[in-house]
Amino acid sequence: MKLLVIGSGGREHALVWKLAQSPHVTRILCAPGNAGIAEERLAKNTGLVECVNISAEDLPKLLAFAQEKKPDLTIVGPDNPLALGIVDLFQDNALRIWGPNKRAAQFEASKVFSQAFMERHGIPTARAETFSDAGAAKRFAQDLGGNCVVKADGLALGKGVLVCHTIEEANRAIDEMLVSKAFGAARARIVLQEFLEGVEVSLHALCDGKVAKLFPTSQDHKRALDDDKGLNTGGMGTYSPTPFLSDSELDQVGRAILDPWLKGCAAEGIDYRGILYPGVMLTKTGPKVLEFYSRFGDPETQVYLPRLENDLVELLDASATGTLARHELKWRNDAAVCVVMASGGYPGSYGKGAMIDGLAEAGALPNAKVFHAGTARSGAGVVTNGGRVLGVTAWASSLQSARDAAYSAVAKIKFDGAHFRRDIAAKALRHVVQTISCP
Ligand code: AMP
Image (cartoon, protein in one colour):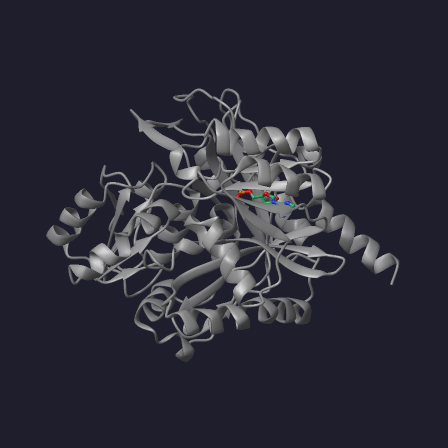
């Protein structure tokens, strides 16, 4: 099979790495890809993955490229092309593509749609209201004592969520989104949710329009600094599985969310084929969905795929063609840990072009893989080219060993201004120790 993968981050590198292992795959094209993706070789014929410099959001150029190259399947990594309707466009042109169509991708692209859907179909979520009027929004924020999360509707590139703890903070966030429209005119509506306390987990389910197959648990570390301090980021590291949910609890939580979600989709004629990723808070009063994403979580993919035993291309093809019921997802018992190495300053402004040393040494370690996110080739070397630069991932039979291995690989890699969290999976390990010593 010839594949076209769209995107350029750590998620896409992990997807390409796993797809390249499939005996079905004879060629992979990636738009636009990155320096690490361009070094991957196919298991079938040792051919290199070919990167082409087309942006993931340039739908007309992607279509023209696909019409010329005729991939058997196109796989969409990021949310923006999905929200822009790449799946509908390719399907209208008789090209097979994996990912939710524009209507289905609204689960991520529109917080207002998503919140209303959850309420219509009894999916457990935070108490929330939708507003376009700042005065009414401020009154609701006051009711919540200022403890709330203000979410811009529409495409926000991960920047449209402001967590508030005082009435002043909430008023400022509401003004920013509804009065000064800091997130653009498209954000003329907001969802205001109560702030939920608890442990946050990432769920993923592969869907084919009829069934949803749940992945094991994973957990992201969203804040930039150790001990969950600093700004929210696209994710600074992940591990899987998380000890905060047992397998039976995962099953219960998954069903509590996925059963009404599937019924709701069927009732409303939403044909969801792709990954559904609910961000879930495990609160004292049960699990609650904070938001839905309509694609793989970026650092989550980097810990899921090393654990996945199935052939990924078979699964994605089954998801696209509505035949997923025939497949059983199989996972290695290993734990996996991914530590993100970022450019100094991320998620604020940061420089690009710093030479990265030690990639070969880190990559040579057993059971480790350095996924590239923001990197580019420069002469014979690789330089930084984004906020999140690398996802340094390792797997082992225990979480502790996987974590040690990931940090050993991180220690081999150097670039100016490199920043990474030193506490990825640390809370999980403490939790395991406490659970064992205090049964
Ligand atoms: P983002 O991935 O940028 O959309 O950020 C969303 C993050 O905001 C989530 O991962 C949570 O950490 C946080 N968040 C969103 N909604 C809530 C909520 N209702 N209560 C507490 N935290 C929330």
